[in-house]
Length: 93
Image 1 (tube, rainbow, N blue to C red):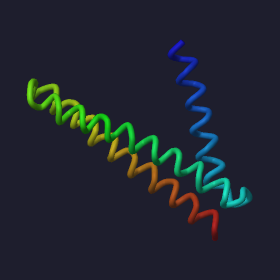
Image 2: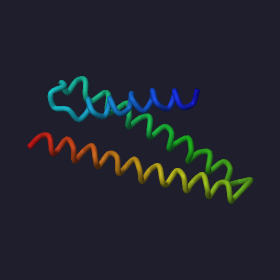
Image 3: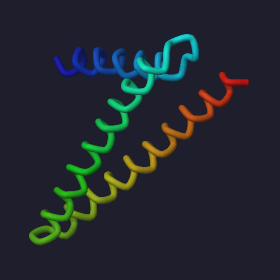
Image 4: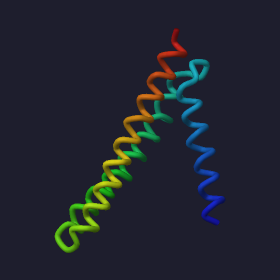
């Protein structure tokens, strides 16, 4: 079940990314779709960060691991946004 759910979400997010970077699609469709991806990433990172801070009071090792995962997700999100930006920039020229 998890594999099916992951496959469907992967298709949805890759499709949104492709639509978001395609200049043939109107901007009023592309911008909200990219906004949905950004908000989803930010919400997951925020929840993990808050969990890491809450766990810090009781278990330092678990908090460090959670905050490290959060940092990796932030790093990955920045990399993904940079690749989307470069793809859009490349399509404009």
